[in-house]
Image 1 (cartoon, rainbow, N blue to C red):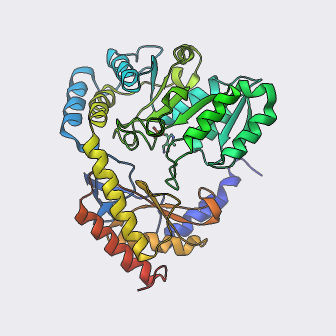
Image 2 (image 1 turned 45 degrees about the vertical axis):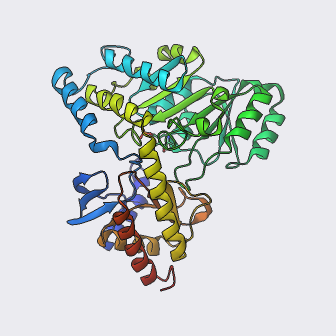
Length: 399
Ligand code: PMP
């Protein structure tokens, strides 16, 4: 087979979508109007699949800070943190993350994806083990590929399976990094973190928690699931992103271990990429303060999630295992049927994410919805009305 021949199947699949006039992986936001509305395919749509949990993307204080940084510090840093791209504001944001989490060490990365690559490629060495929840995000799997460590998966959210595997590792359990997420991005369920943290402690392992979807969403101060479950003292590395509740681009890690700071000298995803732009850092510094003081935003987010979840339940939709701001609507195994449902929602003014196997559990397609504090009750009712109409037309719910 020649080098490029392997892309033929993908190319054909793409042409098929094009011919159908439906391509969920190539949606163009022609104009973004607010955290919850945009023009797509010439229609005004309500956005219900953005991860913009606190709705901060258009917050005037974030925009003002970004504008000021843009004017005073330029569009980009044109260099990595290790070279010329280490501005005082990157360090200030690191101090603010450390204070927010009450941990001594904190590192800011250019994206959350790179934060996971940096930690996983560097922390566990050749004799060590990474023990990860099977439903972990692609960035965690990619980080594992970059690591010389042995990589073992345990069944999603299955504490007994985790304990069994740690037991089998014997002495190597102490050389093991257990990796889980706070709130899982596809099904919107949370890790049984208290039990996981206690087990890792019993075996002397290390625990890394990716709170990408739980930052700003869970916990009294929005620090995530570890805060909500009261186990922050047992977490060794907390990773997260600016690209969801903080409304920008970037990633971070906080830790009680000094080794996190030393990782700056060895982690290639930290060293060999340009640092976040001054505008991103400036808006994130403001967003972090708003998130910390965002009790009211969190209350609105959860009340919106409940309203949407309840409405979909009453329609008879099959939903995920737990109610949270990430709400999956489980469809059939048929990609074609699911594509049509997704497309009809879009044509009727509703944008959600279509997720297909193998990215989903059980070989089923799903519509991944995510709620924002910025949705109004009227928008949620509009979303529900459209879902009712489209799902009934496809026999997914009764009329
Ligand atoms: N971890 C998880 C669990 C995620 O869902 C994501 C983004 N989808 C990331 C990491 C990567 O974050 P970023 O967008 O900052 O690269």
